[in-house]
Image (cartoon, rainbow, N blue to C red):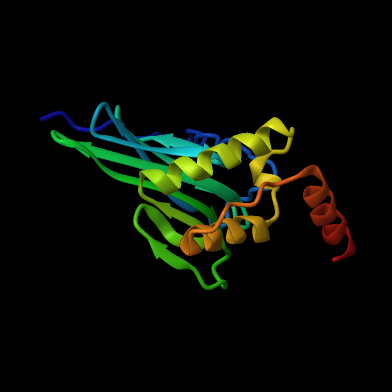
Length: 177
C-alpha cells in the first residue's frame, strides 16, 4: 500500500476557476444527469449551469445559481421498452425560499412544469422548439407561461403558444418591477 504524497508547507493552493456572478459562498443547486445507452437518459433540454462536474462515464452533475431556470428530461427503459418519460421545467431557489424536494436535485427547486408520460412530453418539446425558432432563449421565457403549460397539461386542454408579443409584454412588465 503506497502512501499519498504530502503537500509541502510552501505550496500554493490550487487555483479555483472564477465564475462571473457566482461567488464561493453562493449556494448552488446540484442537478444529477446520466446516460446509459438503451437504459437511461437524464439530460438538460435547456438551461445554463454555472458549473458542470463529470463524475464518471455515465454521470454528470450540473450546478445552477439561485433563480436559474432549466429543463430536465428523463427517459428510462428496460428489456421490454420505455418505462418512463418525464420533463420538468424548474427554477432554483435561495436557501430562504420554499423548495420542492425532487429526486436528483439538491436541495430542491421550484417546479413550474411537470410533464409525465410520452404523450405529454412529446407535446411540450415542440413548444420549446417553437420558442427557440422565434429566437428566444427558453430560459428568458415568462415563469407564468411555464406554469400555464403545466396547468393546461393537467387539464388536458390545448397548449398555448409563446409569441413575440407575449414575450414583449413579459419584458415590459419586468422593466416596471
